[in-house]
Image 1: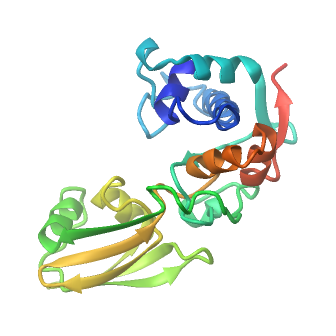
Image 2 (image 1 turned 90 degrees about the vertical axis):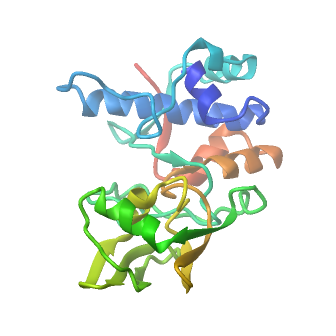
Length: 247
């Protein structure tokens, strides 16, 4: 867990933000352990689950955060909470049901006033049409000669839930999260964007980084800098979950 913190949040972050991340990451691990009990492993060490790189990623602040939150997790009644997190929500987190089918009812969109001045808050990226075609086709969604991309449905927080791609063979309607991940989650940083055509490319102007559900890591850092403790930070992003101790 100490290594996970070193990979997921900067060692220079305020200790209360690191403690919030410690509780979140511990809860995430317990939840995945239960969810994947019949599988060969509980988690992988990538951003698909939680990044882990071994002892070289540990730090003194991370060790302190883990120790001071020892055994603490987030629960929903008798259930261990499902607690996704992301880098930056762009001003508003997202309902989990808008991103994933079967989303948890307790993971609801909440406003965030503390991440808007961070580096990931706003971004612009230009992606060539050919790059999008190659990315989609290589993942089993064949498109040829993209002409236009338009958003068809947005969530109440402004994220693209559904878009339409016009191409030489017709129109293709895609789920917004699926499109983002196929293009690349570090290229198209979030689903909160506007898109316009420019020559042989599309320009995406967006806010935030990640799926937007649960803890906003930049927001947690911002809250800690304003003097909020880790319990208040967790309550902001998981308002229906309770801070409890593992028995």
